[in-house]
Image 1 (cartoon, helix red, strand yellow):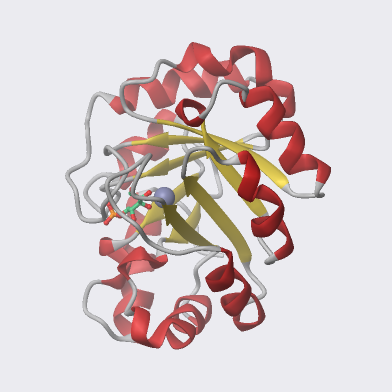
Image 2 (tube, protein in one colour; image 1 turned 90 degrees about the vertical axis):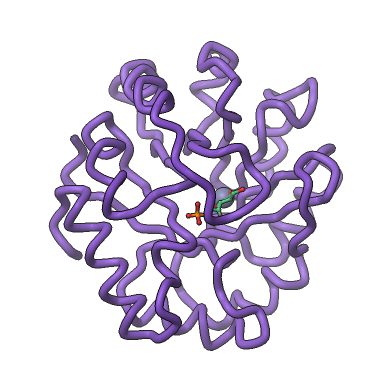
Length: 225
Ligand code: DX5
Ligand code: ZN
């Protein structure tokens, strides 16, 4: 288990009418990163936000903006998300035929490059791009919506990818159905960044967010930072 677990609330579960305040609240309540779910209604059956929203929230927080692109194709939009102020840009391995090229493109803008795997995608698809990666995101639900149930079969996949990473400086992130009930098992399997939407924004007040973040951190067996 990693000593220091990072918590990345997904703003998908925030109140979009007050998005700036919501981002400020999770920042002040101790989140580590801010996770931004970008959906296109094509790669996934939902439409959310684009680079303009990333640009709008950029001045609100100094924390890492972790942008999860659930869009296909992704390459034509990477420059716009980079210029909007993303720190990490993650593409799906299933989103296009040239993952290696997508990762090079992200790094060409000076950004950290991530790859995400849908639940049905085996981990071997990233074997030959490990040296071009800063982050691997294991989806523990089928992407598209917040509030879905965690898929337990993914725990084994997390552990296998932790082995693949070996001594490399690559974050292992988990996204979907992460809560105080599931955080312990994903952290024990080797995840070091936990994305949580509904479990963080539950309750609706900044104090709730602080308690929720702390509960996930504690369940993951981590020390608060
Ligand atoms: C799912 C998104 C997730 C989602 C997680 O497609 O990538 O980030 O918002 O939501 P919860 O934590 O509610 O499962
Ligand atoms: Zn996500």
